[in-house]
Length: 145
Image 1: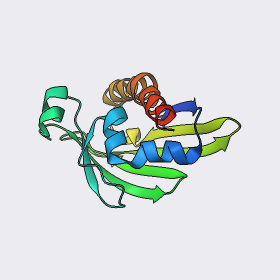
Image 2: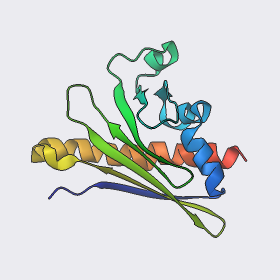
Image 3: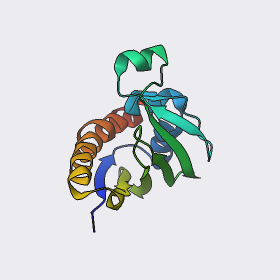
């Protein structure tokens, strides 16, 4: 069985403040580079890794995501659809801790791919979540107090 990508970070901000950074369109674009994000179950939004296209509002070759679960202020889950590849799932859970919020992100669905393909995608996604996206979420959440 292929393991999920798991990334955990602690943020020195109240859970409600982290939730706002996770779900307010003007803040989501800052940490995840999304276009057309709306905090509504079933809504489709796009992650555009190409900065020029993102600035132009162009969703060509973007990652299509659909919000599956919106449980304020505890959980946000969405599908993650690379172009021409079956969807995977991202689940973000927030838990209060002394001095802030524990954020646990799980990116799953890798067992549907061949081993080599899965390892490449999982490795890249793990690095992206752990070294780019979640640290950026921390900056946005802690700065929006």
